[in-house]
Image 1: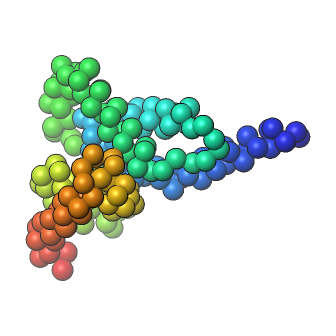
Image 2: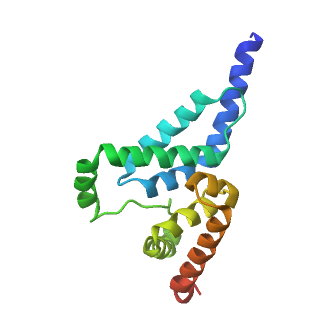
Length: 172
């Protein structure tokens, strides 16, 4: 085996490990940004491929860069498919896409959290999702959403407080 293919194998394994670690949060964020599961999966795949192709070295990307790419691609998709998005939003209104992978014993709790998260204003939803499920820092969230880090931190606090109020009695 030559050193070129050994290096390529290592790069692929590094990416595979990176994707295994970050994919659930990235997909959750893509689901929030789109109207249907298929669009979320497409946007995630396109974003990862775009980042892969843009990498100038064998370094793995910062998660915030991928989240920002997902957000940008979702905005582009919404603009280019406005009529389709209206049709899909109507069709999906009866069966909303699950935001979490559920085990049987956690369904009720997850449903409560999903409903509570959906009731939050979108600006809080984004920050809470990026912080908790994306594992981003407030600096990375500020880059992703193009807002100041202090704004990201305050939106997170307000979002968590609102979630706490709506779920406190049921989860106690």
